[in-house]
Image 1 (cartoon, one colour):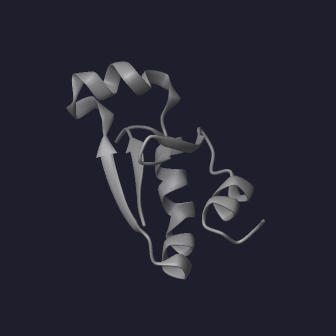
Image 2 (tube, rainbow, N blue to C red):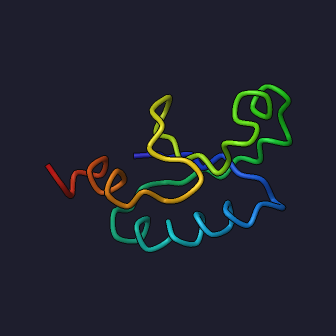
Image 3 (cartoon, helix red, strand yellow):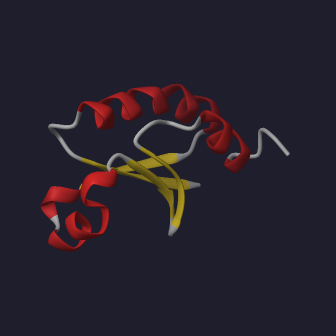
Length: 79
């Protein structure tokens, strides 16, 4: 599985979500692409103030803060 974190370098929430994802990534072994939305005008317009946004393809898992329940369900821990 490959997840994507849409991110801004100067965003403290982004850095927090990235740090909180590390143990999940170690436990579940998913790849994580971290993409700076400011490097792409299309992404900047799409996500703007929603960052950080955690996605699996076009499916949004969560934004602003890591929603551990949604992530666990998405990774098959619940349900």
